[in-house]
Every structure is written in C-alpha cells, then in structure tokens.
Image (tube, rainbow, N blue to C red; front, side, top):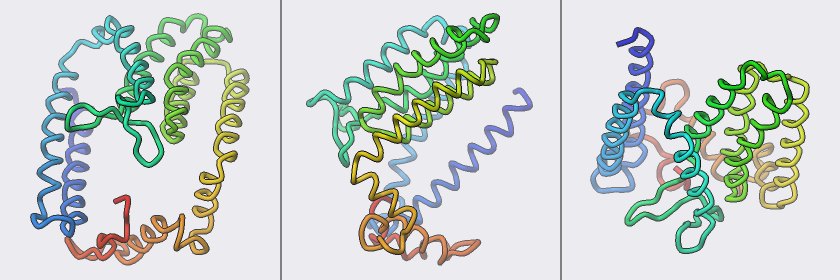
Amino acid sequence: MHRTVTPLITVVLLLVALGMLVLMSASSERSVDASYFVQRQLIWLLLSVVAAILTARLDYRFYEKALIPLALASIILLILVRIPGIGKMVNGSWRWIQVGPMTIQPSEFAKPVFIIVMAWWLSRSLRRIDEIRYGVAIPFVLLSCFALPILVEPDYGTTILISAVGICLMLIAGARVGPLSAVAGVGLFGVAGLIFQNPERVGRIMAFLDPQTHEQGKAWQLANSLRAFASGEMFGVGFGNSFQKYHYLPEA
C-alpha cells in the first residue's frame, strides 16, 4: 500500500467511528433501542466500503473511457429530480429521486463526475490553457452543465461548492486569473441576486447574523446548536447525556 494512503484511510476510519458514536449518543432518545439508527447507518457504511474498494481497484484510465456515459447519466439524473412522479420534494427543494423504499440525491453522484470531467478537459488542454477559450470559456460551459440543474433545485450550497472546486481546478491548471475572476464574479453576483430576491432566504441570512433577535423563529436551529456547543465546552457533557437532543434541534 502506498505510504500516503495509510494516513488517509486511518483518518477516514477515525471519522467514521467518531460519527457512529455521536449518532448513537444523539439519537438514543428517538428509539427504544439506542443502536437502531447506528445499525441502519452501518448497512450504508458496508455498501460504501464495498463501493470504495471496487472504485480503488479500477484503473484510472477506465474513468476516461466511461467519461461521456458518466457525465450524461449525472446530468440526466439532475434534470429528473424536477419531474413530478420521479423527483421528490423535501423542505421546498427538488433534490431527491425515489427508488423503491429509499431516496438518492443525484447531486452527490454529480460531484465526483464533475471533477473527473474538468480534470479530463484541463489535462488535455494544458498547452493552450492560457487561451480564454480553452482555459476559461469551455471549462465554464462544463461547469454550467452541472451547476445550473443543481441551482434550480434549488441547492445553493452545492452550487457554490461545485463552482469553487471548478475554479480551483482551473487555477491549478494555469488558467488566466483575470478572465477567470471576471466570469466568476458575474456568476457570484447572479447567485447573490437569486438569494436576495427571496424574502425567506434573506430572513435566514438575517437570522444567522443576529440569532438572538430571531431565536424563536428562523434562528431556532442555530441558537440551540450554539447552546449544545456551549454546554459541552471542550470535551462535551458525556456519552448519552446531551440535553439538546430532546427535540430542540429539529434538523439533527
């Protein structure tokens, strides 16, 4: 095993173990069996490990050969979430597809595929990366193919994340900073305009900036999250002794 892989796997295993402990502690009030949610999560963990092993054993050149089918499948899935009967709306957003008893979130699959697509284009365009067409224009078209369907779900967080990753990849490849900054600035103002034209989103931003004033409304989740951190101080209140888990954190 390559020496850089061992620390990575070690960190991942530690984070998974810590996450399982936190899940058991935080969800113990919601079920008679404190391990109920952990058992369910372990099933997904097992499937994830199998998928990770299979992915790691594939030659990296396979992804280049499967690039077009992967990209098309990802974009089609992102579009399908907006179709009633296929997509599922949760909390006002169309981000999921119902598949039998479970739901999948296409944007999660789109993230690694987008990185592969961008890496493929930038690597084959290195000799002409300083040209606006190859270093900025076409990469932003590829970025838009993934970001726009996610934006209309709407999922602004994932849109910003994918855009930031794409811009970082362009910078690493050597794209010209001036044109890249100009296009990124236009996109940023566009997203900001979409956010601020919606009173609900403006209210959430104001609640984030002043949670005490909006504590009984839009800042309820934030205020109680802060209480959870403050009451535990540096090392927490102990396994299973959390107070905020008693329905004070609705999105936890």
